[in-house]
Length: 422
Ligand code: AMP
Ligand code: GLY
Image (cartoon, rainbow, N blue to C red):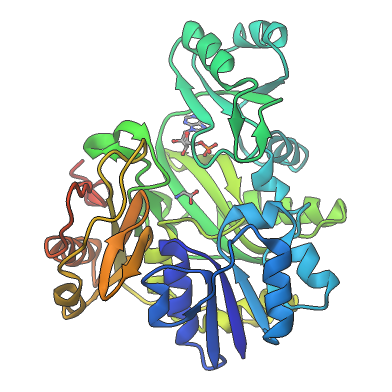
């Protein structure tokens, strides 16, 4: 099978790595890829949002399966375009991807299908905001539309809510000027990421994981795309069936009823407290960095799982997971998630390669001559595996200690919540 992976992050390196282990894989391309994906795939110089360019490439190269990593092309309709040209592709359609593309849409679907989620109001101007704010003591103020993780402001007072509305309304993010805002009750608890393979009717949950969104230890500082993740997350232990039945199953039913069945990976971000949970958000894809520990624990062939989703055969397909745990520590550039410089030379990758139970997934990294140099905010996802979460964490940090570049930053507490020491 000739496979095309779309994207250039640590998630896509992990996807290429896992696809390369498939009995179906003959040739893998990655567009645009990074210095890591080159290990398993031929990088193709097409941007991940160039839907037509990607479809032309897939036609020309007779690609049998395209696997989309990031949300941008999904929300832009890459799946619809490929399908209209008779090309097989894994991911939700444009309409189904609205579960991530519009927080207001996601809230509405959750309401109709009775998925547990925080109480909320949608506003489109300052007057509506003023009235809505009165209904909350503390709130998460969220821009509707894709915002690359920058569209949510946590507010502890009404004054902060007013400022958040002012800052977000009409500001411009990935999907253009913000016209709608969701104000929702602030929830407490521990977050977990639950991803599932979905075939339009059925969902099969993957091992749970937990991301670390803030830049500094102890969940301090700005929100980022994610500074590290581990799997499985003990906070959701024993909750799989309840999460399947009260979140994934009703949402898939509702999407099917609306004529946009959800096929692909659906990611539910949960807030868990004392064994009960609420959905904070949906993503229409693998999480990044969650993909790195989660795929490290996937025992089954990823192409088989993907085809089962596309063909609506998830019910007949056994998806197996490895015992043990995995932990991915992100190394980022100085200044991230704000401004940062690129082009810093990286050392220690060859030494890290020799370590057992370790895989360094490249993200914002590229090859310059024979050297790997930094090329983005999040540069590597150093991923350890082990029999226990403790072992996986130790293996990941052993890898981190070998890698060096000017200004590198990483959190030292990834996975600590799972050990009960944070
Ligand atoms: P979202 O993109 O909606 O998941 O929001 C990004 C982050 O904001 C989440 O990962 C949470 O850390 C936080 N967040 C979002 N909604 C809430 C909420 N209702 N209560 C508390 N924290 C929230
Ligand atoms: N790590 C969070 C996300 O992928 O959205």
